[in-house]
Image: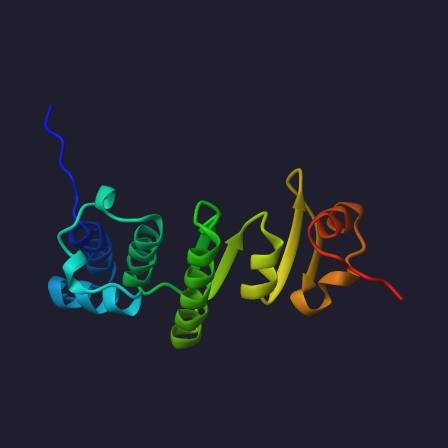
Length: 162
């Protein structure tokens, strides 16, 4: 059995292959990979590295570059920062904020980490056992009415009521 290992360039190119199928757009893979890597805070030295040679934060940056490569309107993040140390989490969230502003993306950010929700998100949807409990703007998160949302908030944040 032959196993193929993908370099960072190969991983990002997978997104370009999909983009080309949908748009017919011809892409200079090396130039676009370098551009995307620089956008996410990595340089072209990462092009021919393998995922196992990257730190968690670097790997997450490559994943963000892959997502951006297909020029989406919406990007879904599922526990995107949960495995990273606190410092790297903040760096990645700052990067996501910058990219969101540049491209006017919509993010769906699935997480149990409420502090990251308040830092990165505009709105929060509380989901319990597959049912939407409540949807609020982050600015009004302390006004949560559902029992589940209140328990979650009180377990993480010190919310004071007048």
